[in-house]
Image (cartoon, rainbow, N blue to C red; front, side):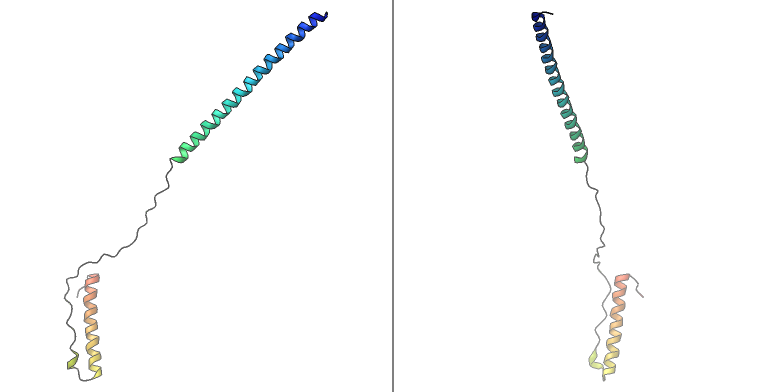
Length: 113
């Protein structure tokens, strides 16, 4: 083999190696770009489904007492001036307490006697 032939072959192999390196570089770049596009697509899909979720609504009930008008007549106040002893005053106050309690229960529970 002559020196010129050897030189020509060497140039040819260098050119082929250079073309191969360029092709490999483009192949690596395109693979990297495709990987990045895939990654971005996965992140967007995950963000779309997690961003739309709403927390569960919890309803708490609370008992509220509503005042209702009572149409029961209040008993008359006891007349303590008629009492002669302390025992009579205690009896009058106890009777008055029971009358007021009965009127209040009638109004609250609706159990009028």
